[in-house]
Image 1 (cartoon, one colour):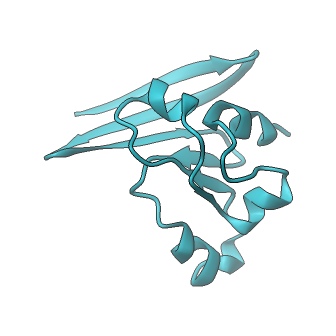
Image 2: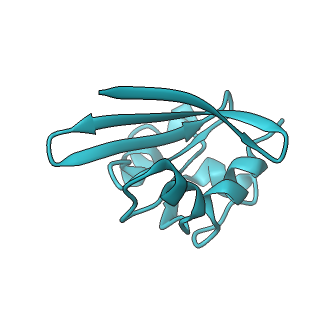
Length: 101
């Protein structure tokens, strides 16, 4: 099952996406600038092989729900996310607010 829901963080709308897969869930919260995602995100791939795309993203591990993703510290981030002031250890919802234009 795929679930898409708008969520509000301090007056800003983001889209939450959860995909139920066998034995795991894929979790993403995004806007038009960047996203945070569960442990399935390959930050190294984005930073190395896809560097020219300048993806703004962060990864949290051990999360099973969108709420946990929003409240979890980011384990790793892309170079472009770092340029916005997002750091490893920053809580997901705080990182999303840095992705506001």
